[in-house]
Length: 90
Image 1 (tube, helix red, strand yellow):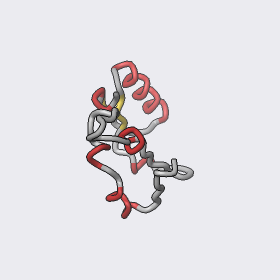
Image 2 (cartoon, one colour):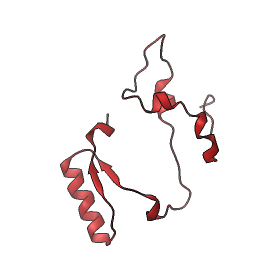
Image 3 (cartoon, rainbow, N blue to C red):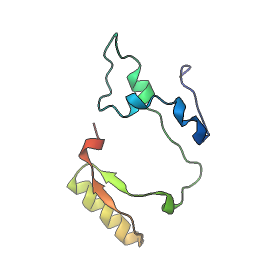
Image 4 (spheres, rainbow, N blue to C red):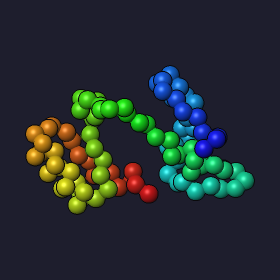
């Protein structure tokens, strides 16, 4: 979008609207809160790969997903925690 900006420096994290990012809801509340969806859809993209050591855990929505992800991690021989976090999903 023409309104969106892209950053590639961690020093620019202060430019994100953290109050909207940490809010539970996505919908706008005109005229008080507008453009919330666009601001919340900020993505952190990683070029090529990220070392597994940079990942502190995986959050999943339900027990079924937890079982699937834990099985994948076990089969890969990795050590990574999986946490049931349904409140992370909308």
